[in-house]
Image (cartoon, rainbow, N blue to C red):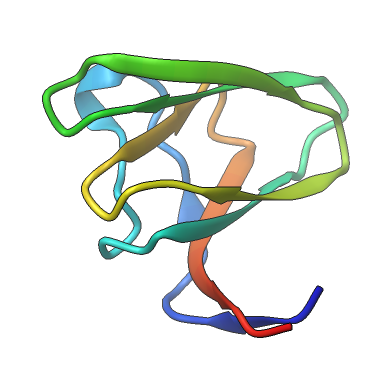
Length: 87
């Protein structure tokens, strides 16, 4: 998969009240920079939970979401950046 970076990577918020929509991106690359598996949550802009998944330690994933949806993680070791999927 090829991606185009659309912003600056930043630590994810760690609670429902401080999630990020990553510049209204519809795809977000997440990386767990730590050595512990971390729970990642995706919610609507109204703080209604859509779903969760575990991001393994020292791994990355691209999450597709609606532009207004927000992402937060169980620890700030999870970093995210908005991306476009190009191929």
